Image (cartoon, rainbow, N blue to C red; front, side, top):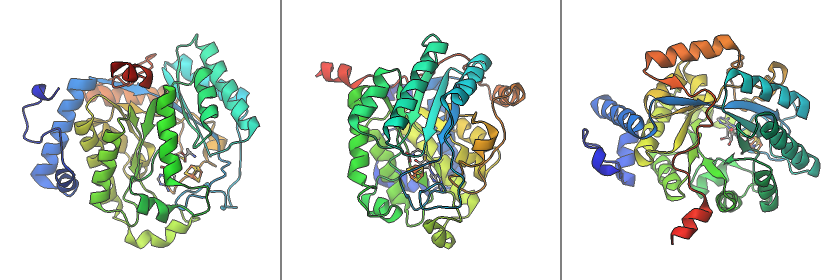
Length: 366
Ligand code: SAH
Ligand code: SF4
């Protein structure tokens, strides 16, 4: 792999110090980083951008993460759960429009009813697409047997952000009530991998108390646990959350955005063949944030296809973009913008991570 990459001086095996320096870089060094990441991306994942239709199933959540607008203590939120029928309508429309994959995301719920509903949606999605639509779940921490049950019913991928690889910072961002445990989150990632999911994780960037050294550790963490996909984006404050009290410590939006771009570029250097999403949080800070992330390493976009009424109630952070993204016009706009960048939408393609090999096979190697 490394032999093919020779035209720039930034190496692809980077130490914590080198990563930290690059996260702090500007001017020519920063431009070189972005150019190198773009080149690696072209070589390893090509010129396709894959679509995932994001459906926000429910904003009910048992957790109380100090940064999140839909945390259970926020009583100002109107709570909803989409019915299986509503979700399937959105899935069908996405399938007809040429999406090759959908993401079901939700606040964390562990009731039998919730588990059954997800199972039904997964089966139904596979049924209506003859098994072709790939499914990512992002429904928080569950019991191992729940993860297994959803996998056996057809879920392909699971996205569970570690949020930060620093246990000390994780503790500052979550209540210490037994429900928000760093080690439990790590264990969940291991279980998902063992079961055979394509595993995705990610972090928030520009959090209060977060240093560039911690972000470098985040990158090395993702490399070490050998993820298949990543969704990470800037932290965005929400007024009805405890972390809002620390907003005066945040980097200004442009710098936070720029740090997000550098994280994407550096992860592309460290893990040339994984899938990296250009996330909505990037777009919240810069209208062209997703395009900019694609230019420096991301290869996945996740248009929000949640019905509009509920989309308004799934507010994890302030200024979340809310417009419809699954209509023909919006896709045509994406096509235009990507074509101008020399890229194409991978219509009807699941866009699996080429990095992925199930744990069972990896064990067979030994
Ligand atoms: N409940 C699930 C999935 C939904 S939340 C879970 O927590 O895993 C999805 C992601 O939204 C979280 O992982 C977190 O990284 C992100 N998020 C929450 N609040 C945020 C904020 N204020 N700014 C940026 N991202 C946020
Ligand atoms: Fe719930 Fe996820 Fe928000 Fe935490 S980040 S409060 S688990 S929705």
